[in-house]
Image (tube, rainbow, N blue to C red; front, side, top):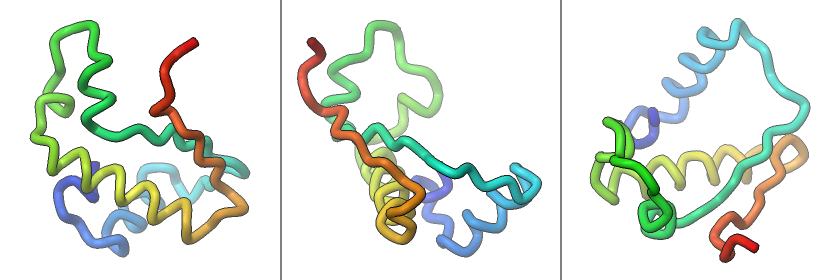
Length: 85
């Protein structure tokens, strides 16, 4: 949620390196869904992060999509906005 809190990409990368001790996965699967669609799918009361406003979730989504675009060989972006089968 660093992007949601308006942290810079540099600061987010620094925190990620610290939190993972420099571990970088070979593949990250990013399930991309619009915040509005995700909210419609809630089956339980939202938690603290889920209760953040739509703008927060839009910034988080944009941050993850920016990471994926910067390293497309390491990210698989899956459209999770489709109706479940």
